[in-house]
Image 1 (spheres, rainbow, N blue to C red):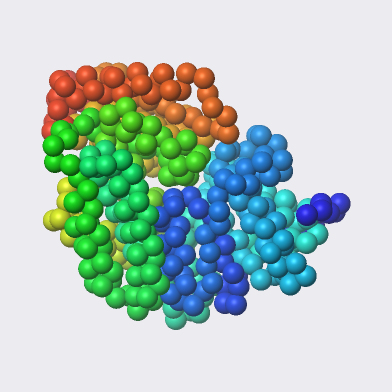
Image 2 (image 1 turned 90 degrees about the vertical axis):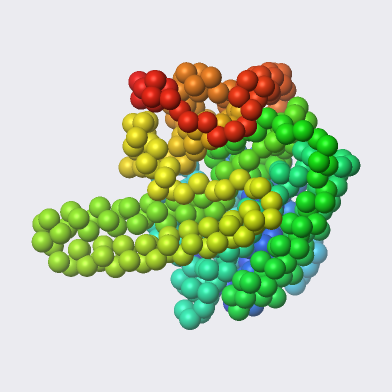
Length: 464
C-alpha cells in the first residue's frame, strides 16, 4: 500500500456515517471475540455479508500510523483495518475494489476520545490512494446506536432486537467460561468447549435470528450450558471472587489486556467481568434520561414544539430500554435456573448507588458512571476484590480510580488498577500476585456471601 500525498478532509463527512450494507462486505472489529462473531452471524442472517476481522495481527501497522497520543484501542483497530485491507489486496489482486467494503467503527459523545476514532481512521485510510473508497459505517450514542439507514426501513427494528439478543447470549457464554474454567477437570477443556459453542451459536443466530425465533436460540443455549456444567470438577473448592470493570474495549479484548482474566485465574481467582450489554443499556438509559430532562424543561417554558420532540424521544428510548432489560432479564432467569452465573447490573440501580453515596453523577457521562457504581455494587455483594482495566491515560477510568481507591481502602476490599498500552509494564505481575494474595485473605475472612454494608461504612463512603 502506498501513501497518497493529499488528504481530502471533506471525506470526513461524506465517507463516515450510515451506509446501506446491501451488496457490501461489512467489516466488524473484534473487541469481545464471542460478541463480535455472534453479531456478524446475526447480520448474515439478514442477508448482509458480515465478517469479523483478525485482531492484533496488524498492531505494528496501527502504531506506524498513529502518533502514540491516541488511546490504545485506536492503535489496535487502526492496525486491524489496515492489516485486513492489505491481505485483501494480496488475495484479490486486480479484482480488489475498496468500494465493496464498509468498516464498522461506532462513536460516542465526548470527552472520551472514542468519538474521534472513525474521523482519525478516515484520514488514515484516505492517505492510501487505493483505500479511499472504503466507507466507515458509524453508529452513535446520540441516538442509542440506532440502525436506521443501514438496512431496509421495515427490517431495522428486527435487526436491532436480534443484534441485542446476540450480545446478551455472548455475555452469557463469556460468563459461562469464567464460571467453569477455574474449576475445569482438565486444563484447556473450558476454552475448547466455549470455542466450539461459539461456532454452534453462530450457526444458530444465522439460522434463526432474522425470524426472531429466540426460543430455538435459547434451547440451543440450554444444551450448551448443560454440557458446560459437566466440565466442572465438584471437588475443587470455591475461589475468591473478583469483579472487573473499566473501559469496554480493554476489559473485553484479551490481547489488549494481556489476557488478564486468565492471569487472575492462574493465581486462584474466579472472575466476573462487566458485560457488553450493560453498555448498550446505558446508552439507551442515558438518552432516555436526556429526553426526560428536556421534556420537563420545555414543559415549564410551555415550548410545545421542543416538548413534543423530547416526548417522542422519551417514548422511543424508553421503549428500547424496556425491551432490552426485559430480554436480558428473561435470558438470565432461564440461564440461572441451570447454573449459578452472575446477574447483570441494572443501569437505574447503578445511578441510584451514585446518588445514595454522592460519589459521581450521570450528568458527567462516560463509563465512569458504570465503573464507579459497579465497584460499589461488587463490594456490597461481597466480592473479594475489584480490578479496573483501562487504556493508559484514559480520563474516565482515571476518574474512576481517583474516586474508588480511597473508598475500597475504607471498606477493606482489595482493589487493583491495570492501565495498558502496547508494552509490558515492569512490576505488573508482582502487583497482580499481591492483589490476589489480598483477595485470598479477604476470602478467608468473609467468604463469598452477600454482605450488607453497615451504616458506619455508608458514612465512610459518603465522606471519602
